[in-house]
Length: 460
Image 1 (cartoon, helix red, strand yellow):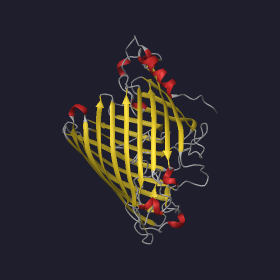
Image 2: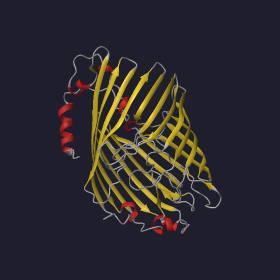
Image 3: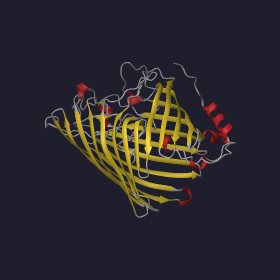
Image 4: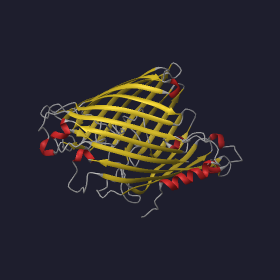
């Protein structure tokens, strides 16, 4: 199935055409089913894009339409430190990625709604094999769920995007071309100063062709709660999650995994100094191995340059790796469905990792956000390899599992910028340079990586 290619110029033209006649919209969220256009519900004189929000379908029934067009250009020099499979034709890659998502939100009265979202993603310009899970999905029913809404309860059944906390447990995965969804049941209980979610879901496996996605391979069952204190200046997340799968491998060993994750996250929203502390412990079994793994993160930042909304901060992160392949224990921390911790420059997830990172955030212009960050990265254990954010082991090769004691992954220099013209249109430029350390050099070519991307996004 071939779908016409939108370009940056078409997106920009569409933006400038409609923005002049469109009134300010209330809220466009990362999770599009959380968009808030309720101020338009009783508006009888709508202009521009507002006309497709809250269109009546009889008495007290409405339909709202929306979507997203995203164009992204990426360049890699020395993809994966220069170490690629034999099926790859090159390590210096330029590629064009596109994403089109269209959705409809149908409300029946005040208590019931149905949400549906179609997705199209594709990749061009790169002759290397596709990774369908993240690169291309020609057409899919990305989300489709029914929701019953009561005063303090929400019941949602079907295919849906989810995220919790700071995206370190479950996320919708915004960075890669194809976003991530889950299939199952979500129950949300609302309190005056917090929420408590119960979920029983399975991750949707995104496939390349038309309406061929799969689910019900892995199982995810858990609760996630958030409680706020001191007028929402302090917050506490707490969670317990059970994960069951036969698809993940540790040191290239397959088997049945039944893993529990127990975690807390403390965070603040103060004027000058803020902190975030998160810790998780994992137990369970993998084949005949007992799971004992952990993940700890600390982040502290200080507000500077008040007129530019600046922040200077520092993050320290440690996640366990397997310590001994003969002790009948598995110490590799399972990321579950977290976001890529170190961007898209290299396939390194926060498993078996030591990370120290200073950063600065600033708004030099009112609509421009800039993040500059340096990561100093190392393996935590020399008896375990490194894993991609999707928990696929990528280093070392199976025949060289314990061939080196080297641990230093290297230094990652990262620059992220985003210019938000308004709530509909944004333009982002990112650049990263990964200086390879002793471990990539000992387990492969170990070339330095350069990554550059330009992204144009229009949402309505």
